[in-house]
Length: 82
Image 1 (cartoon, one colour):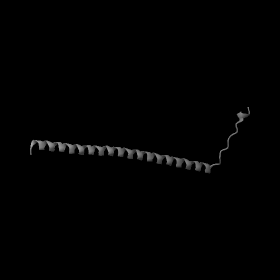
Image 2: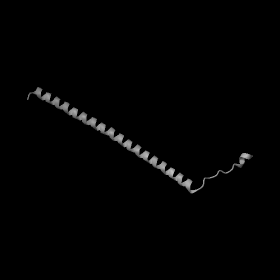
Image 3: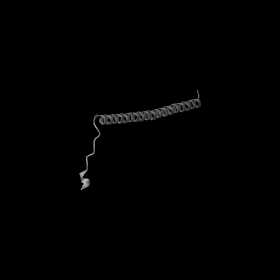
Image 4: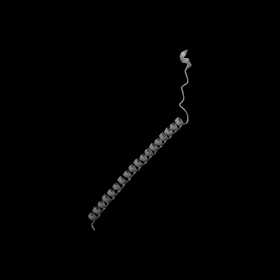
């Protein structure tokens, strides 16, 4: 093999190596972006589930409170007549 052929082979291998490295880097960055998006989506979904559970619990407490005792009457405000 001549020196020009060896140089051409070296350049070709460098291009292939660079292309593979660039492809791997792009895949890694894509993976990190996707992982972050999924993580944030899961966090938001759990927050939404917690919020809905708290709303259901408060609604249930309100229903139990309204069924267990009569409605509270307002006390007269005697200061209004002074």
